[in-house]
Image 1 (tube, rainbow, N blue to C red):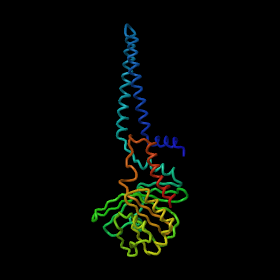
Image 2: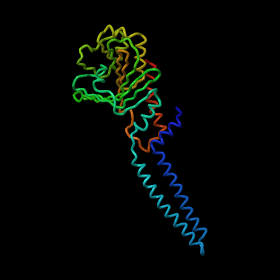
Image 3: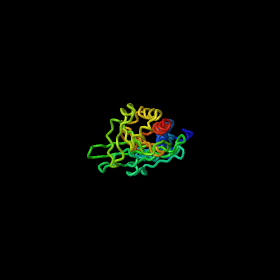
Image 4: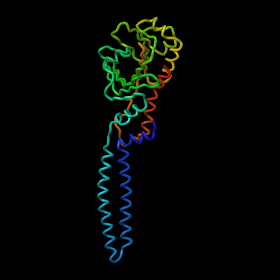
Length: 292
């Protein structure tokens, strides 16, 4: 992707830069017309030619007034311009950055799909919602990524986070779930999901481990897998991290302070700068794939 050409294309679609250019052009015309009118009077300040100078100056002032009116309308339009950041910036960049990339601000995981990963408490007090679904293929791995929101009024839990699903082969027949040691415990109605103590003290200090079968979880924790878990933890992606390995899928969730993407695009946004910010967020997909 040619970045400069891509930026120009986005700027054209957004229209903000076009309005700014028009305003700058009108400002230059203001200067030209004022100086032209003054110069005409100066050159013809006596006798018969004075009337011609006055006429030129008057025409300049009329044109100036028309341009001023148009400039005011453009400025008001620029000040009031509020566009969907996700539609104009995130969506086209996602489609260009990832193979078969797609982005939907509304369509995303259902509450049932979120709970089915076994990474979230499934008792009635907990409510989940999601948005900002990003899909594609990166480094030969298909993935999806969404913002997930967790709320429980009874326990005063309100968390924002980024949820990833990777199509990566693993040896888990049943789910094995890792939750940051400082995170709230999982409360599952499924009695098969229970916390276990693994044979590795490092993992026990870093994570709460949940599984159907203790032996299966311990067999899964090879030296290579322990190294991967420690690498993911070292990224410090969020205050809490949850991971689930199950049936050729890897699920990762980490908490964030707010939504992943801005809600509104205004004149203050520079397209090049915003793409750099998005690139850093998109890079997390590659970082996790490299580790896994």
